[in-house]
Length: 124
Image 1 (cartoon, one colour):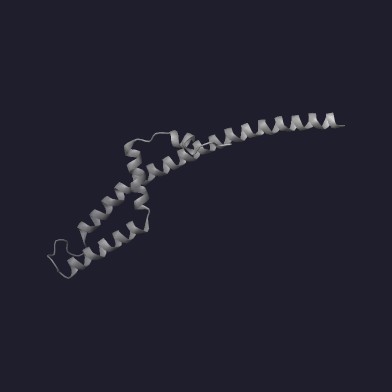
Image 2 (tube, helix red, strand yellow):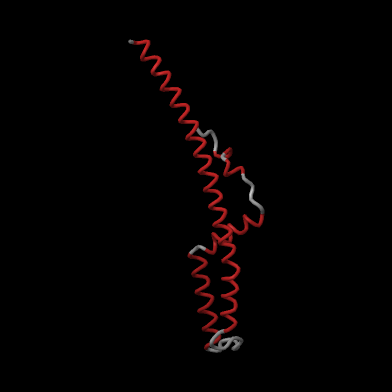
């Protein structure tokens, strides 16, 4: 029986600051909020430049906007991959922990079966 989740091996593993930041960024970048923000940003950028609302600092075909979006993609891709690697590490640790628990449970069940067999023999 698991006594406390704080003793779980997954919780005992210490991630570096960079790994924790990468996880937070990947969580945000994989959200609808981020997708809507990027869409709103791109549409606003296009409207401001197409209709010369402020000044035309990035005329059509919006090369600067494309550069910004490409940079966001270039930065987020490895961050998301790092976060996925940590998810797989957590899954591996969880699988090892589950295996150890199952082995222990199997031994305990075998012991209980032996005790029941002994009781059954005494009752006959």
